[in-house]
Amino acid sequence: QPIYAEGLCPAAGADPPEGGGPGSLDFRSSLFLAQVIRPVYHIICNEWYDKIDIDEKSGRATRKHHQGYDAYLPPDAANYDDWNELFCDPERLMEQLVLKDGSRLFSLPHGRRFAALGIVDWPTSLEGAKT
Image (cartoon, rainbow, N blue to C red; front, side, top):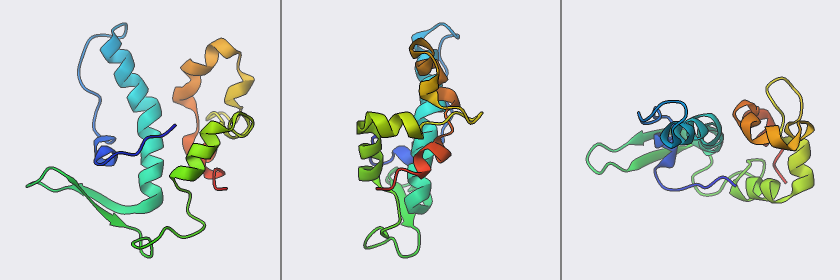
C-alpha cells in the first residue's frame, strides 16, 4: 500500500542512489523505487498539492495545496483511504491495475507480475480508486 510520510514527495523526484550494477541489491532496490514507488508518490502528491519545495534552512518539505484543499480535501479528490481500500480489495485491484499497453497486470502469469510492476500505468490504475 502507498505510504505517505513527511518529505517523501520531494524525495520521490530524486535520482536513485548510485550503487552496484544490475545484479546488486542496491540496483534492484533503486530500480523498484524509481519504477514503482516514485510514480505512485507522484500521483498522490499531484492529487493534493500545487507545489512542493524543500525549505533550505530546515530541510523540510513545504507544501502548497491546490486551491480549496487547505481545510479539507474536496469530496471528489482521491485520498489515502481510497488507495488503501483499493490495495486491500483483491477483486478491485485485479480490475484496476492496468499496464501501459492496456492489458491487465493480473492477466499475466503469477510469476511475471512482480517484474511487470514497473510497466503499470499508475495514473490510469489509480484514477478509478475513489470510493
